Amino acid sequence: MEENGIDNNLLKKLASQGFLAALIPENLGGSGLDESSYNIILEVLSKYSPSSAFEIFLINSIAYPVLSDDLNYLNDVIKGDDFIGISLDKTIKNNSLDSVLNANGKYTIMSSDVPAIAENENFTEKDFMGFKGIRFGNVGIKNQKI
Image 1 (cartoon, helix red, strand yellow):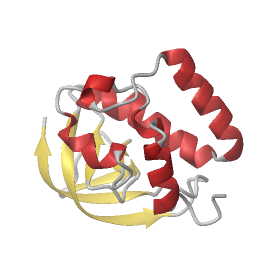
Image 2 (image 1 turned 90 degrees about the horizontal axis):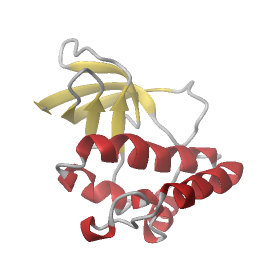
Image 3 (image 1 turned 90 degrees about the vertical axis):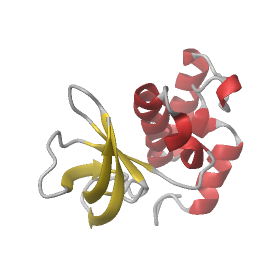
Image 4 (image 1 turned 135 degrees about the vertical axis):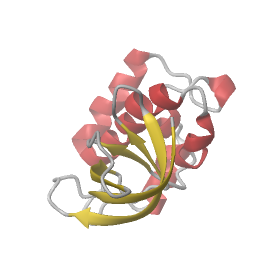
């Protein structure tokens, strides 16, 4: 299933089933699932597509809690039209972040004491993460917002 990563068709199907917005409340455009239902989805899906389950986890368990005050950054993501990057690097060096999961997304969430989001300018992929559907690499950024 993941020989070539998460393709656009699979991402759109995950979005149409509501998985990409599983924990986001219905009044905000999500599925509004409870934690138990969400965990079942992750558990079952991870048996067949670990990368898809990981993508759902990144959006619902990391990106949504950080961006819950401004879901504009997630609109295209939960529709299956884009990815959201998650930086494992806490420091910006020369307008660049190293070690970003989903480095091919339009935005990257930067982990630090005060989470911030940056608009991605370009990315350089590293191919050693083990999840074929999750792009891992360095991201050049152009705008940052706290």
